[in-house]
Length: 199
Length: 209
Image (cartoon, rainbow over the protein chains, first blue to last red):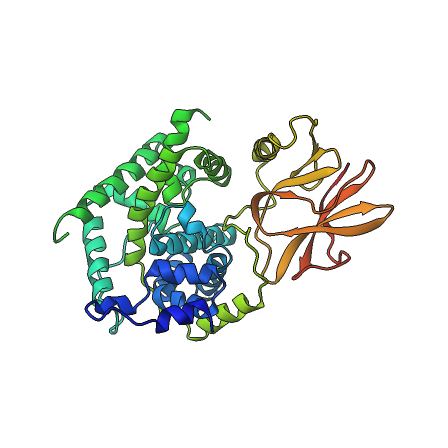
């Protein structure tokens, strides 16, 4: 029996229902020990969001599947790296997925000639989606609309469009330094907005 | 790149918006800058929030099995890092990367090789070979190999290639598992996992010692 299975079947604290569920960190640690069940659990937790992100960037089902598969395999190979990156497991996994998708979109050169794209209209997502996830999505969408237009544009074209900062500068016809400032200010403002109650 | 310039790259790095050679340079900077790692971690947390608004179709149900099957088929190695680099970098970047790679390799070796003189040999096809005595280390940035493939290093002496270690994609320093002598050739090929006793793939990089 794997370490992970032992962990799953370990008796949970009675007064703390959440103790039954291993934390993301625990799942990732089990993945780091080579536990295949843990990798499946990790996919169950983040696979859907990873695929949504990859599809948003790549706009192609097959490429999105490739990006997600390669990202999870990268996680499988180096599950300990998240400690080095000082990241939450969720942030780290989505970072790996994002980078993979961005690298693929650059390789495929799928962005040429695409119109500037803005964020999609707020959406409710799949019907069985976790309510916490749905709230978080709504909060981020709302925060994005609060950003100054040029900051929002820089963040969206970089994060969802896969443009590099120099491509952004060229595309928008502004100096590179301006793009850097917009991205930095945009992330800072986004943090403030998301920290506000009922953001 | 000045220190001031490099600190301005944090937001772009967190958004994966650095150009490839800048990304590489910045990551080397992160290796040495605690404050920058903290800053990137914070910015990445915020950038990661953007992932929550991305929604697409459901992943196909078979994707989960495909990932698990691929993981089962993989020999586990401890050294692989998720980092990507193309074989072909802009000409200006190649020199910078080679110089930086050499610096890393030499830095890593500084303690153990204080009394030996290491020399750097540029490899045909990219990367550098650092030779000190009969030890050699390949320092190179390579694209992730396709699924089921691995990079293999070889030491070729008297026309006979012998395996000298396997490695994955990324910018990395790969100490060879086999000593090299004057006149030997070090080569890198792409092989089916889990590696082979004799090279099957064509030579991607090589250098004479």
